[in-house]
Amino acid sequence: MALLEVNKLSKAFGGVKAVQNVSFSIDAGIVYSVIGPNGAGKTTLFNLITGVYTPSEGEIRLDGKEIAGAGPHTLARLGVARTFQNLQVCMNMTALENVMVGAHLRLDRNLIKAALRFPALRRRDGELRDEAAALMHFVGLDKYVAARADAMPYGALKRLEIARALAAKPRLLFLDEPAAGLNPKETIEVDHLVRKVADSGVTVVLVEHDMKMVMNLSDRILVLDYGKKLTEGSAAEVRRNPDVIAAYLGAHA
Image (tube, rainbow, N blue to C red; front, side):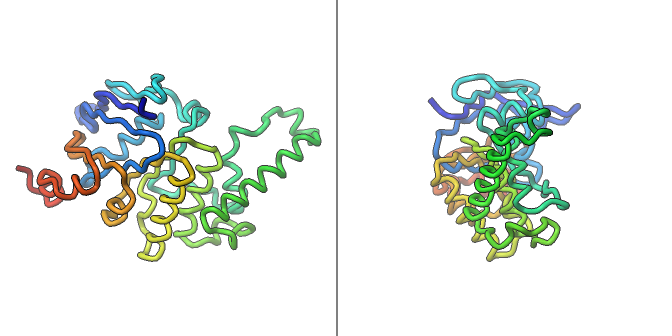
């Protein structure tokens, strides 16, 4: 059974059909990329699967269980995490604190215990700090552990978001344009990081405009155009597909 199954998924905003009858499945342990021209419906698709939007029609199944319409907090508990196109970083917090925020679902949120600072809670807080520091090492941000987020360069903040998402211990991680706005060196760093995340056992679903990065990383690729599924296949299959070439050149056969 596939980890994620999407069947005839659609979303309309008034008279605009942003996603139309899209179906695909994702096996565990792979990098699965979603590509397409601007306005193809890629981020809308992400928002539907991760609970930001409710589908107009269709099914979304995680481990065979229907999750369409479930909120982000529910999906996070089921092992689904994501990053966004635009940075969602708490700039007035340290980098380490930002990563710890990602683990909030695993915290003991009993207010009385928190107020009294029970020893077990203090120990757990220390453990979470250690976990957050280990994740910052994993994404290559050791030197920023004590830094405030507003003092970090943009490329480092993109990797910080990935570390925070990983703090929730996801099985399925959605990355929405992780290389957007990065210079070539930073893009290579993110490329290597995404592969490292996948190699650690986390299934990665990627939206990205950098085609070199997509072709290098992806085990499978879904191509959208005007909200519809254009094709799906390996990087080699997608690269030579004439419909994909036409869509990116702006000419439709």
